[in-house]
Structure formats: C-alpha cells, structure tokens
Length: 270
Image (cartoon, rainbow, N blue to C red; front, side):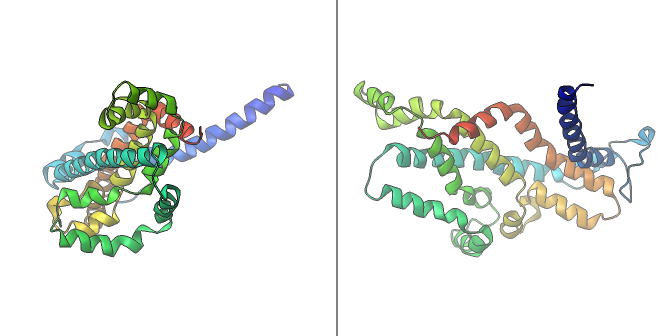
C-alpha cells in the first residue's frame, strides 16, 4: 500500500470506528425494546424477540394519546414558529424603520437568557390566560429570536430588484410575501422546521411544568414516568424511547438535503 492510499485509508477507518461507536446506543436501544430484560447488556437471543412491549405501551399504558399530544404540539409549534419568524425576519431584512438595527440587536440579546430564567414568568402568563393543560400552552412559548435570526440571514440574499419589480407590477405586501418571498426561503424554513421539531419533540421541562393532567402529557414526559414506574423492565422503557426517537430521526432523513442547504445559505450575507 503506497503512502497516498494509506493517507486515505486511515481517516476512513477512524471515521468508521467513530460512526459505529455513535450508533451503538441506538442499536442497543432498539434491540432491547424487543426483550423483557431486567439489565442492559449486549447479549441477545433473537429467537425470543417479541413485540409485547409495544402492544403493552399502546393498549395498557395509553402512550398512544401521549404520542398524539406530541404530534399535535410539535406540528403546531413548527407551523407557528415558521410563520411568525418569517414575517418578523422579512421586516428586519427588507423593511426600513427607525431603530431597526438596535431593536434587532436587543431582540437577539434575548437568546443569551436561559430558558430556566423565563420559566416562571411564562408559566404565570399562561396560567393567567387560563391555558393550563391545553395544547396552546405547550407550543406558544417556542417562538424565539433564533428563528428570526436564521431566516433574516437567508433573506439578505434575496435581490431587492426582484421585490421592487413585483411592487411595480402591482403586488401588494401580502402577495409579495406569500407568493415571492416564502417560496424563495423554503430551504431555510425547512431547516427551522427541523430545529423546532427536535426541540419541541424532545422538550421535557416545559411539559412537566405546564401539563399536570396525565392525558396532556407529551411522549417524552410519558416515557420518563414509564422509566420511574418500571425500573426493572428495560425492554418496556426502551420501547417507549424508540417511539420517541424515530419521528425526528425519520424527519431528518427525509429533509437532510434541504436542511444542509438552508444552514449553508443562511451563513452567506448578500
């Protein structure tokens, strides 16, 4: 083996080793979900694999309702965040008004405030509005400055001449935004949707605080309760964890090309 081939071969082996190391926990989780193990190890008898854990989750533990809650909350959060963030980003990127840059910097500074700091004030606001144990209470707090910043950076690449020509042709602001701007920023909207989906789907602290009724628990919260109630049956716990893991994983596999494109183009300022 010559030196050039060796230089290409060694990094490939190292990357393969790290890749196998990264996927090992997920493979172990999925395999364990088909067993009734009281301990976690790498010993499996494939002849004893069964789907009883998944049947029990949906039939006896009502995780189907929790899965539905997570889907409803996540879809609403993705849609709301995309709409609000894109409208705000359009204003900051393509409109002129007094103090625009300072106001945007002030808005951007809110990203430095940890969510734990605003947890109690937001909880009081939700309780005052009478939204406790409702879907809006679970997805409304998702709107933040990150989405606005991400889309604003992408919108800088849109040529002003295109927007001006559309106005000359008689396009109103709603038509300009919905028929010209939104189709052009689709890649970054997909990126924001993936970020939002993963964030909301995996969120544990906010549903724990705002949803006191078991029927309003999200899947992540329900799996944590499952872990506390069935400490000896890791197969059942891993079945719930697998259900919580698969939707964002499948979403990323489907939209990974648009996700990478949106992130790459957002970092290019025109």
